[in-house]
Image (cartoon, rainbow, N blue to C red; front, top):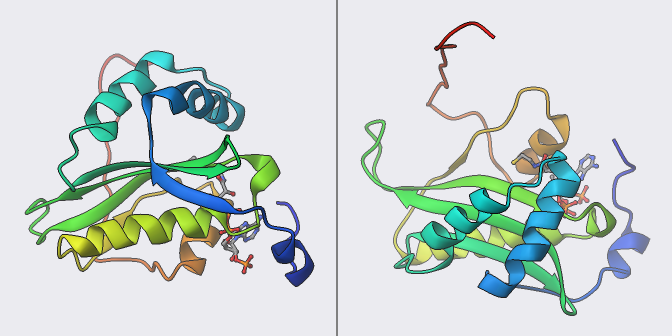
Amino acid sequence: MPRRRTPESKAEAPAVQVRAARRADLPEVIALDATVTGLHKADYWQRVYRRYGVAGQGMRHFLVAVAGARVVGFMIGEVRDWEFGSPPCGWVFAIDVDPRARQKGVGSQLLGAMRERFERVGVRTLRTMLASDNPLILSFFRSQGLRAGRLIPLELDIGPPP
Ligand SMILES: CC(C)(COP(=O)(O)OP(=O)(O)OC[C@H]1O[C@@H](n2cnc3c(N)ncnc32)[C@H](O)[C@@H]1OP(=O)(O)O)[C@@H](O)C(=O)NCCC(=O)NCCS
């Protein structure tokens, strides 16, 4: 894992604006996702944009962090109500920050912007899930105050054996 952020590197942070994603951002989002995951999923991102980028009615959010004219991060979240026996809560289910822009507060800004949007519609709990073999994302979410919650993920392999 790269070195933690220092007060000096925080001072070098570029001015970053967080806003709703626009269709024109998609090529950069797709490229950023491909950099981080190694997968180029253009169709997937078109679907995400149709569902979260437009007509979200204050409940679905596809946010990008922009430094200058460059997309340096994104986050997707949604308010889901009365699932798992829970009052409306805000789920965050995707986050990526450009490796060149990390440890400068961009991830924190994205989460802060998402939190504000959730709070505006009365949400009082923010949730996410993460892969157990991804200590970086765990460290990030813990730094933002998230702790183990009352839900437990369960899964089952189905279909023919690989
Ligand atoms: C996790 C991630 C979003 C963090 O973004 P970021 O812009 O670097 O985060 P911030 O600069 O806001 O850091 C906030 C805090 O997170 C923690 N953190 C961030 N990077 C860290 C690192 N490399 N090691 C340890 N802790 C780290 C720190 O506590 C940090 O606070 P501090 O700098 O005051 O110590 C970014 O590293 C990323 O996109 N990683 C890949 C994400 C991923 O795997 N996505 C796929 C699954 S959804």
